[in-house]
Amino acid sequence: MQQATRGREMIFRKKLKTGLIGGSIVLYLALIGMLESFEDRFVITGVVGLGTTLVFLTFIATGYLASKPTEDDLPPVQSGLTAGAIAGAFTAVFVLIFETFIATGIPIRNMFVSVTPQLLDMLEFGGGIVVGPIVLILVGGLLGAAAAALRTLPDEIRGAITYGLSMALGISLAEPLLRGIIEGLSIPSGWLYSQGGLTVIGAIITIGISGYGRWEWLRRRDEIAETRAHMPEGRKRTYQRITLIAVVAALVALPWIVGPFISDVLGTVGLYVLLGLGLNIVVGYAGLLDLGYVAFFAVGAYATGVLTSTASFLVTTQGGGFASHGFMNFWIALPIVVLIAVIIGALIGAPVLRLRGDYLAIVTLGFGEIIRTLVLSDWLAPYLGGAQGLLRVPPAPPASWDLRNPQNLYYLIMAFGIVAAYVAYRLRDSRVGRAWAAMREDESVAEAMGVSVIRYKLLAFAIGAGVGSLGGVFFAIKIGSIFPNSFSLLVSINVLSVIILGGIGSIPGVVVGAFVLVGLPEFLREFGEFRLLIYGAILVGIMVLRPEGLIPNKRRERELHVAEETEYLAKLVTGEEAP
Image (cartoon, rainbow, N blue to C red; front, top):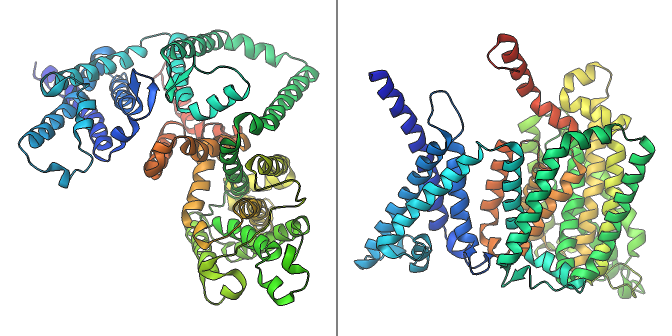
């Protein structure tokens, strides 16, 4: 009897802990102002805002995690209901406390600036101080139970529901981009979007179509995989070419469909794709953790400015005809800039050849800060402009092709991005790529097997620097001016975040990661002050739930899951788990 009672207490403590964590997350998001700020953006117009959606998602995650089956546990739905209700009750207690403080005239906003009547009304679902907390508890419990019930459904139905709802949320958040594309094609968008969110009809259609598509895919995935496996190689290549042509055609047409603002955002995404491809060579292929990658971004920008700007010291000292067009034509300067970056990459790589892991990261971080300090210094101010920066960087010729126009610049960035991606793709499976892979797995073993570790490390730093410098080149002609504060440590962190999110070693992953971390915040201005918080949350979530990234490199995915497979096989051998 005592053992059974103790067992029930342990189960309840687990649900209590999970529920309190969920409630704490809701409370934290409320106190930092995120919920109220996001509530201004509709997910479904007139029905639910983004702030309320975050509360719902927290309750759903709480119930889903609490219902994870373990020995001697409650039924899944009961577990989710309990944890979700606890999360709602925890939030409701603080709502009541805040309401009491406000009613008695205590200046609570002196400490908690974001606790406003509008926030409390949102958390009470408009029910007031009496009904609102009860509704909050009920909503938490019901959403937790619904999330737990998903575990009991067949894979096809569970996948269809979660995918349909996720697509509705994603399409709603992507309203600035998708609405521009739809209207650019002269298709009415009023049936899908209204006031920044999905219409009710649009949400139903989105959930229905995407959910059904996912259900069909999950139901027939084995059949599709078998068909693909037995497909002749010639037909596979034909399909791949058709897909590639369609993607390129869409990319070419995109800027004239979406207009200048979104083209400018896509250009910024393209800059981070170039930086990500370069860092992916260093980190993803060679396994060298570089936290000072912003140095090569700065080298590309400043070298472009020095060689092409009409305000460069090369012009002021030479004078004459240079004053009207800069010291050098952009297209002549471009390979010189890349060569300079390659040399500096090799020079930075030379002192760190014997370092690995955390030590390598710290030293490269130091080199990145050294470059930033140098461009700010009085010593180099006559050449690089110091804190005043370099001004009057001209766009790339010809003058008839105005590269200050984001739609035109987009094509230039896209073209070099495709070239950089092709180079990275060819390197990955080449002899050099295999040497990098061996170094990444075990540097000592690679050296013992005859791989010239020093040579290939320097090569990785040099090629990565050259590709990354292209981002600096196009940044310089995009902005027209170069200032030292554009090259902070945050740039290195952002680029590293891009490749971690997309998948280390994955070329498509770099593109997806850049769009998610750089493009979406531009479309969602509400994210502005919470960008770093969201970066951190996304990275933690990816590391825990999908460490291989959104579009992982196949080899790395196998490496990360080999331990899980080994553990599973061991359990099969010992009989602890059924096949």
